[in-house]
Image (cartoon, rainbow over all chains, first blue to last red; front, side):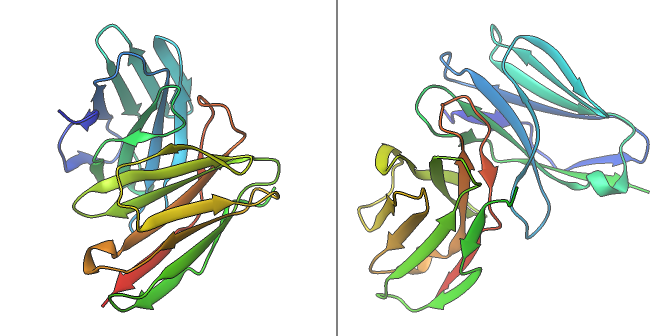
Length: 110
Length: 113
C-alpha cells in the first residue's frame, strides 16, 4: 500500500467550476499536510498547509483534513485556466521527510 | 528573501560517471532535503540534513550520498551513474522542525546517456 494516494486524473473542469482533489494517507502518526502545485517543467510550489482537523481557506482554495478518516482534500473554487497544473498532496510525521502522492493533473477548460 | 537556488540547472552525463549537485537554502533555513522526481516513480525522498547531520534517508542505493556545510548549503553526489538516474533532482529547505513547510528550488535536470 502506498503511503499517500491521490484520486487518479486527469481532472478536467470548465472555467469557473469547482475542482475537487482528494488524498488519503496510511500513517496515522502523520501530523502535517501540504498541497503543492507543479506546472509542467517547474518545481513544486506550496499552495496550502493544514495541521488540524477541519477546513482552512485561502482565497479560492480550501483544504479539508479528517485525521480519523486519514483523508485530506483540496477544493479550487472559480477555477481559472492558470490553475491547470499537477497538484501534489504531501504528508509528514516526525521523520523529517515529505511523502508525496503521485499527483492529480487538473485542466481548466476556457 | 531569495529562494532556494540549485546549480547546475541542467546536466548531461554518461553511464559510469559521477555527478555533484549543489543547493543553497533560503537564508535562515537550516534543513535541506533532497528529492528525486521521475515520471514513473513520482517524487521520492532521498535524504535530509540539519546542522550538517543527516536525520533521515530514503530507500536509495549507497551511490547516492549527500552532505551539508556549516553555512547550511548542501551537496548531493551520485556515483557510477545509471540510465535510471535520469531525473529532476529537487532540493527543499525549511527552518528545521518536522512540521514546517519545505520550499523547493528550481531543480537540476540530469540526463544520463
